[in-house]
Amino acid sequence: MKHTVSVLVENRAGVLARIAGLFARRGFNIDSLAVGETNDPTISRITIVADGDDHTAQQLEKQLNKLVDTIKVRTLSPDELLARELQLIKLNATPAQRSEILTICEVMGGKIVDMTPTSITIEISDSPEHLQRFRALIEGYGIKEIVRTGTIAIQKGVVTIR
Image (cartoon, rainbow, N blue to C red; front, side, top):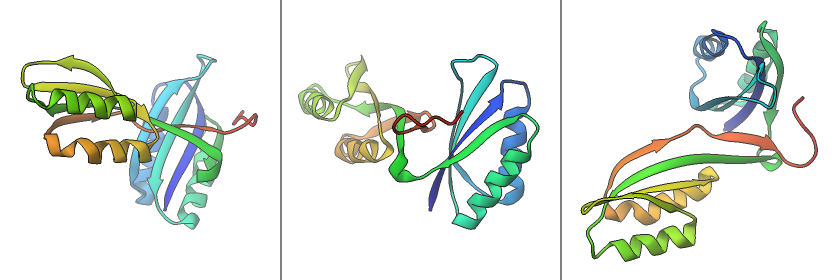
């Protein structure tokens, strides 16, 4: 089962290494990891998506809370979070295929950010599920390269992690 963990930490050197080490020691594979400053530059938010059972996720949350630089840890359930990921996708594209690709981008929310005589690069940001559907639609054109950010997530509604 996928677990999304949001961790507020002191914005200091070495914090990410300690968190990654914790996951490695527990044998918990990280599917996605994104780090960025919050509205307070002394605090960063780390969003981790990992696969594992509920017991392991609970243990990791407890271990993360014990780290010195950790301020708050929350595992977000799928029904209470908004998640987004950014992808840049470079496709093979002949002039005859461009209009089809442009139509797919318009419908699915992609944006063309670069075009050459033989390729198109698309930027798209949405939920991981939406991005999987988009990728299925464009795979037939020949994906040359994909660059992805980690998933970022925030809790729905007025509740905050702070």
